[in-house]
Image (cartoon, rainbow, N blue to C red; front, side):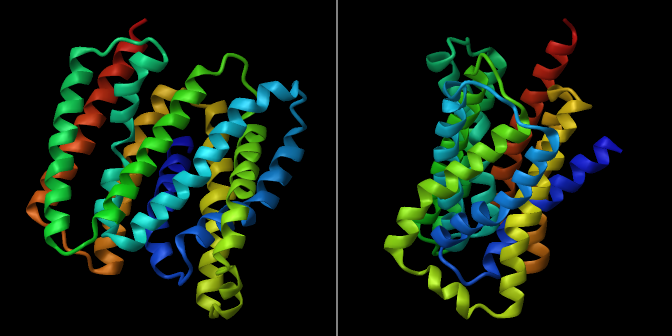
Length: 287
């Protein structure tokens, strides 16, 4: 049952790119509304679990990661709207590679031969995708911001891995999403496009609400509740289903066509990272 819940979460997150295409709002408005609409759900879950009373300084890493998360959503949504969903998804999922590159500097970890191989193969795949996508007439900004989104999420991963004293997952998630909404609010007000929400048709309103409630509030709650029943090494391999579902939905629902270089690049990036994570999981399980 836990594995089924995890797959459902990956399906939900994999559909985000398609949802953004059906909502005629700017990437900034979407990122802000996603956080804002999710807050009541996450607050109710947090209160139901009971408050995690910690000194406010222990929340600082989560506040910082919340700032990065807000801009990570913004750059990813911009990528979804200005390049193909499949390319944005694959480029974003270079995140584990950035973690491998930065971990020695930030966490004083050593890069193994396996990780070095994954890094080289992933960048080869990235070059294939960028070259092909650019030749199809997509702007480089969408590709670049998809990559930035992956880098921001990599920074969040490194911050979370460096936390010594943790707070409850549900409390941490609420703090991160609240911070995301607050940090994006000034930019939304300056942009001045949020008023266009009033002009959305019923379908777009439903999709926007689902983006906040289902894709964020509900999905995050289910995902972090699974950590109470599963080990992280059991959960990580399933995370590679998210980009696969994202690509599948873009092909089936948006009619995107995957070229041979894109497929090859995707296989190199996702395949090498999956194998690397599996090897790491087996190594940890052996101890």
